[in-house]
Image 1 (cartoon, rainbow, N blue to C red):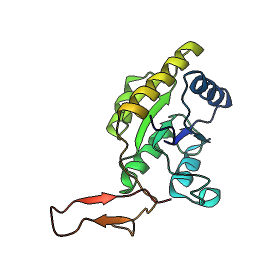
Image 2: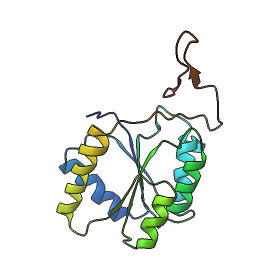
Image 3: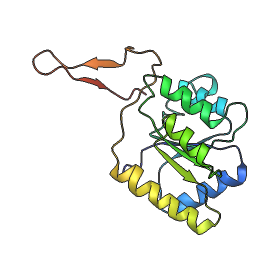
Image 4: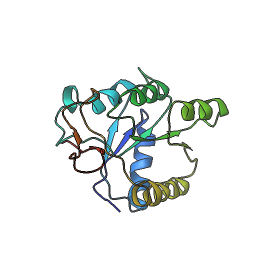
Length: 174
């Protein structure tokens, strides 16, 4: 497990933030969890704007846990924005919401969510959810490379030498 993989939690309710943090601790998820509280703040964080401009202090996440019902911009708006950014399009986004509406499930997947998880009612189930995220998304699943440059073909994109196949690679830029 990469305990350096960064998790960004987009959640406006303080109770849910504390539940996730406590459950991750109990599920032995050692990864750093950064918290943003509205949809606009998610975008600022991902773009590295304002107080989030220091990537040493606010690194790009490997995994985004995204609530749908947030102030200013909804999780749906954030998801749509992320998938339009070439450098962030591969970011793994897990919707974590209290909604179990089939309409919300379908829309989230249509907009590019990698998973749709309903917030558990019992704390023990939050711990199980933390274990599931740790085991699958942080241990078994490979993390795609994303970078900070929000323009396609930006300075952080490299091409392999012309001696062999032409592979494009992206590296993580701090």
